[in-house]
Length: 507
Image 1 (cartoon, rainbow, N blue to C red):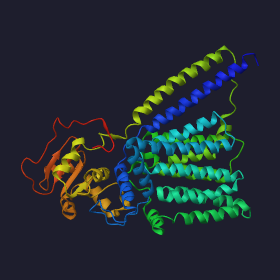
Image 2 (image 1 turned 180 degrees about the vertical axis):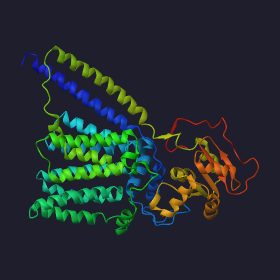
Image 3 (image 1 turned 90 degrees about the vertical axis):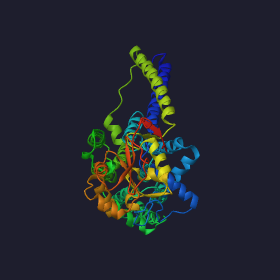
Image 4 (image 1 turned 30 degrees about the vertical axis):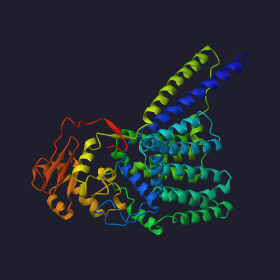
């Protein structure tokens, strides 16, 4: 080594740290960008109700068509979301989401370190997990808790495989929290069952096998500790199906855009490359878990985040070996120039990412292209203070937030938790067909109808005689099923221009 070797090494370490900080800041800026999911208004409102009453309701007070017992399988997540909203408003919700994903990435990093995965392979793997999470983590949803607890489960499995058998005691705790936070616990339970069964068959008489059996039973019992007991199992077993045509992240990969199927393809390619090029074979249980999640994600793209974290945590050592050894860095003038350029670029990216974080961290974005006009809810609250309102699927919880308790809705994003399949099917038929609109309206006995102007049924209603227009805006139309006085209608005017975005909760 030359005399300036130590100084060169120090510069390179500082440059590497700057690059890592810049990458982390870019991931943070990307995660901070948050859109309002159609269910966000409901999640915060329902969490508020639970905190106020100190109970989890089984009867729905917000809809006049709900016809099944309300099994709120996300009640604890909604309490957390309301707490974040009550404390800091929109920035609090964003912070909650970022914290959950950051903790999941932190658990992945710890698991990789314990398996001997070093930088830069570790940084690359964490970037893969973060990038694969962006699409589905762009909103504040109870699903963020699923990815955190899934990472915790995988990290625990790794510790057990490396001889820390006592760590398995955390599994029932993870499942206990998970069953009250989000329905994704069934993915965790399935992963645990597959992993435990494989380990059991490989060493049936071992101490680990006995511990796995005991903990699996304890974990199953832990999922019964929820406000609904056995009914939680029955609810999820009968309602969790891939046939949810109106929900995008329940669709198969091949029905989605390039971003989704390219993500799935890239993840599968990484796993295949790692298994093909690595000489250190992973435990069979890990391979089976990854294969099962890859197949599941192909049919339900919501599982892509789970697949990404499974590949990163369970196949991390194989990915590192597949990447090969890093080439020795140049110590000459060209190496010094490259180091300086990397450091300068990292500083610029770091500053830009932090500035972006500061901007997007202030607001959960309500995109105007997806939601009613800002003045619509205020107009409705003034002119239609009480009654029954036939609502668009995505706008139900938005209406609950702005118009309850006077207005009760006919449909919202809670789906099977409060509505039977018949109620949902009847609404979908009305939205997109409308030929039997009169019979549906008679059966529903709604006082008002608030729908996106683009729905096929709207043109039928506007040209028919069944209802009268109470509000007509660029994005939405409010109808009355009852006679209304002259001058009560309000057509779209220049006073209601569509805006690019606004902040949650709106209007």
